[in-house]
Length: 230
Length: 230
Image 1 (cartoon, rainbow over the protein chains, first blue to last red):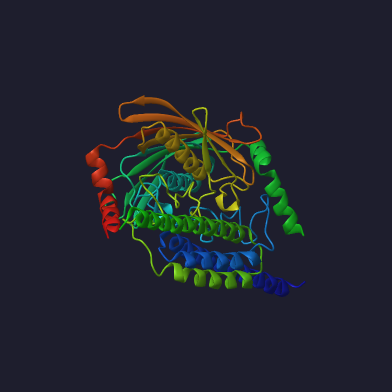
Image 2 (cartoon, helix red, strand yellow; image 1 turned 90 degrees about the vertical axis):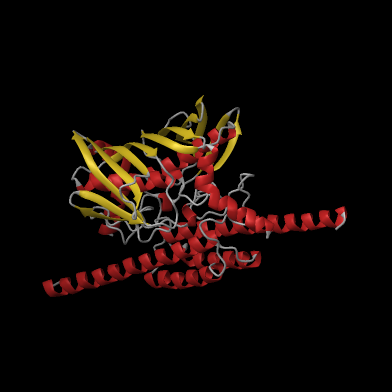
């Protein structure tokens, strides 16, 4: 194959991949809309029964070809950090608000708004949702510091409840690096009152040794190699 | 209205309510199937695009009549502890595995199996998902002890990653009650190896004073009173 042919082939693959990623993100948007409507609905019971039928019909063709636990999604790029189905940040995840994270002067800053699907105490976010958002924020700060690791501890302090339907601002930063252990801290506030901390967390993330990574992720790494070779 | 007529009317209301709760739980099942299929699918991109259209069509009628942030669902019973949309245990929640909790000799025991939608590190649950499950477990133990409260702290220690597609067994119990503060502890293990703790948590739950409850939940309580009177 000439370099030009090879270039065309790669270009075609990239276009297909980009189109698939867009379709996955759009499907994610549709799922998030559906979930919020299904959580908030006071439509008549007959309408709920019809919706369940429609949803099962939409689900069936998607279920005809599915990956297993040890296969990563074809549209993902694990080593490149593309995780379309991450349940906090993934554009394709029905669970993700999604939380959008960027870097501002060494600080990780996240934004999201939580709908009724995230409700714990009436009109506020479930305490576990706050922990989940903060785990992701801290993991991001740890990862961009160049010392990625798995969550070892996550200590969360709840000062005030986190309101639903309200733009939120989250922060995270690395506080200390000691060998394989990185400590990070983070906060949740509303975008309107960023100085008023509602929830704060301290997390310890631990870098895996090579043999740990192999033991935990060996099956996934092996599958990815197979599918690329195939 | 005679007592007999009144009895018939209440009976009709109950039948309608039970039927609605069943429809909500069935819609929840359909949503969970859809989300798992949409997360795991390797169907062609065209199929994803068609699915998004179908999902938006299913979502529209549900969105025609929705409750707001300060209204609880008509099918819920806040004081009776019926929360169909709780994002961890709710039969109607698309996010809930759902976690099923029961009491065994003073210990709260939870069971669930997590699909690919809950994935963090490849083939394992997101660390935040474990925190969310444990927050719910601890809150349950605290609540059935007769001292319900809001999460004040949740300290989570991750010993080993939590596998997806594997039946899990969670536990929680109250460790100490000091005035308005209740401390509870909990664990996550697999059902096959319940003695091998994967994640453990200690939480402090704080009972609200009357004025705090009024400040936080006044708008919800007010709305519920209005809708019952109306």
